[in-house]
Amino acid sequence: MSKTKVLIADDHVLVREGIRALLKGYDDIEVVGEASDGAEALTRAAELNPDVILLDVAMPGLGGLEVTPELRKTVPAAKILVLTQYDNREYVFRFLRMGAAGYALKKAAGHDLISAIRAVQRGERFLDPSVAGAVIDGYLQKESGEGDDTYNSLTEREKQVLHLIAEGHTNKEIGEMLGISVKTAMAHRANIMGKLDIHNRSELIKFAIRKGIIDIR
Image (cartoon, rainbow, N blue to C red; front, side, top):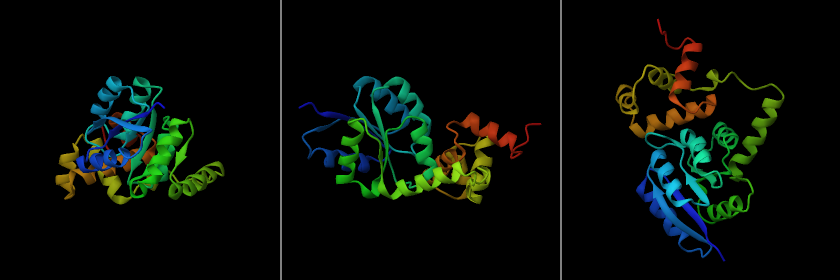
């Protein structure tokens, strides 16, 4: 029986080690590599040609939203399974539209993660049960035209972060200016991109200009 080759992409060493230890107990799954950010995930995916890529959302440099389209081009046969702490339906919509095969939550990792890996490897979609209902509700809301303006869906903190990103500040600078950690700044950026259906900085800047958030004069 051939094994499902898995690449783990997460910026936390302990998370990667925990997932590796979990998967080691299953004969049909093999961890072939790890990556600590999106850029490394691209490189490792090209080298290892994994069957399944476990992908975190918020990572330094290229995050999950930004690297997913590139992974789809680099290793089109690989199944991307998002593994994250964020039970955010905007994320789910965005990742699925970009070609991800599934969306799982870290808090439910364990047997559910094994089921998710096996499901996407079989060519099925996998959605964590705790987000599936929200996804259906969101779809029905959009179909009925009840969706809110995307900018207004941002929290006040997310609007502050968007403004600073559009001005060209790095995650580190944003963290220092707002008194938050770099990881929190990265998480806000990922939230913003998910809610606005945007996956790179240049599109964020264009959005900010259209909305009058920044003035380019």
